[in-house]
Image 1: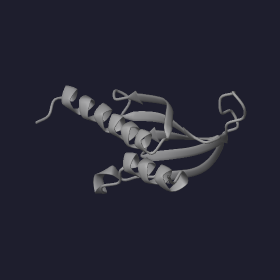
Image 2: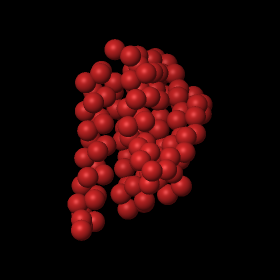
Image 3: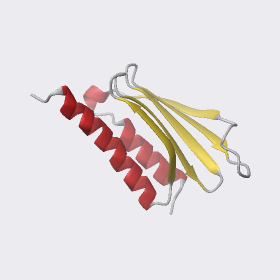
Image 4: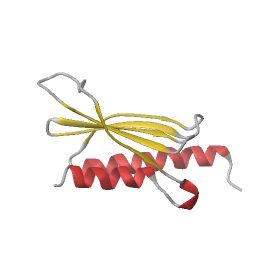
Length: 110
């Protein structure tokens, strides 16, 4: 049986691997906030060209919120509009991290 410390490390490793995959496609992760102790909640902001996409994973309720904003000049993205709210059933194999990877691969093709 895995200990909580092992689960926490795997949680962070999975997100870190996502960041590496995005960087390989020249997608900048401007911020990543993860809370293992809050049901595995995380927030990630990815940027490419003049656009940012923000993902909120609500692990307790199983919803991923996707928002986007243009990036104007040297300012931070601040015109967020919701694009999608997607539910996941992790028990049956739904994976929000893989969804984000696929979503950004489509959104920002190389």
